[in-house]
Length: 344
Image (cartoon, rainbow, N blue to C red):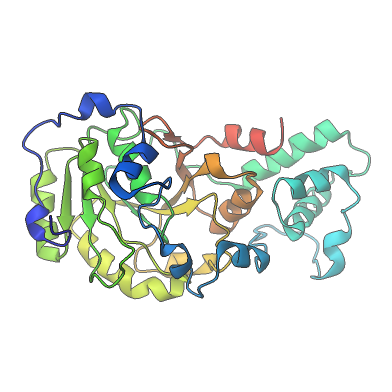
């Protein structure tokens, strides 16, 4: 099958024979059959290539600067050695062990001090709850009853967009009805690491269409209009995001007739993304309305995820925390997430 052929853009004529047997299957097992071993490797070798400057995750992690953004007033802080002023505190050390940068942990301590909390004399249990409440104020969550009618997911390579869409498309409760998937193909075949995920969707009985032009998009939408919500799978974006504008302008042109539409930026919990400039997101041709998190099960600690959720300043709606299709996708729970971070 030619992966870039528009003749692929057709819906199955009836329910797939795989519907029953694929329920609860391990996504990694199907990937191994399709592409060889490696969990979640839809785009096998794109990790270093899509980081913009070619660094590995380890290199990006070493250069990482805390993206923590203070959105409320407080005492002015100066950069540099100030990160050490709370270092003696056991809770500060716990936050560092959770994966937060020293600068972020220090600014969280400063904010609690600005609110009048005595960090030296308050019982440690009370302080953990105070920090939990502060994180709940910092992290936005999408309304649980606002399930998107149509949804496009975009993000860098190996973020887990396709596996998340696959879980959502086969889940009984996350979306309205039985979604159809439209897969936007890359504009060229120059990236040899890219692999068309259409066979994966069909393996799980998901109605999927490949689209390479705006005319094909119009036809795909006409075919799918009576099937329920549409989920749009997009090619991986380069980093830094400022270099992704041409690709996103192309994606935006495809999305024009699809209304209403939510756009989710996909964040992998396992990637440092040290060169991700979050200030660029609101000015991209496709503006995200929320963020979805993938690979939570593979992250040793969630402190880095906390920092990115604060910096992105977007509501979180969906998470993926394992390879099982569809069971390991669910709506994001702030209480569950913060309780785990703070050991409550």
